[in-house]
Amino acid sequence: MLNSDILNEDQLARQGEEIAEVNERLSGRSQEFRVLRSVELNFSPEGAGDMDPAALRKLELVLGCLHSALRRKGNQTDRYLAALRNPSIHILGHSRGCIYNFRLGLTADWSRVFGTAAQLGTVVEIDCYPDRQDLSIDLLAIARKEGCHMSLGTDSHGASQLRFMDLGIAN
Image (cartoon, rainbow, N blue to C red; front, side, top):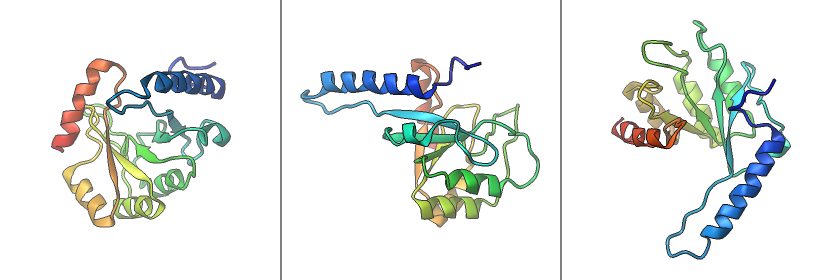
């Protein structure tokens, strides 16, 4: 059964066509703006994505996220490294899987994780949603030391949640 929040490859292709139409209407305006063809990819605990890599190659941005087994207590470094080595992703999202007052988040050898991300050219997301608090100041310092590039994302599920970007910038 298909979750209504999850796109399959056919829906992703149709979405790409719609985005191309929007971008065509936007072209030629005085202010440049375009919509990127992108998706949030779900990783298995082994680092495999839940979509066909051929469909992902047509996209401009793939955010890869761990959505399952997020209460594991042991060191998850190997899991992160497997996800980072997935050639389809550009950004590792929801970095620790932490949700304030609900889930502590995963632990890892963050120097290795951020170092591998830097080596592979994979960006790591700072999730700006208030309940996420994925990356602490200490972890951001490690990421900087390892040369890891960061992105800001709100994990928005509606336009009103875009305002959370300020929280990530303040981090």
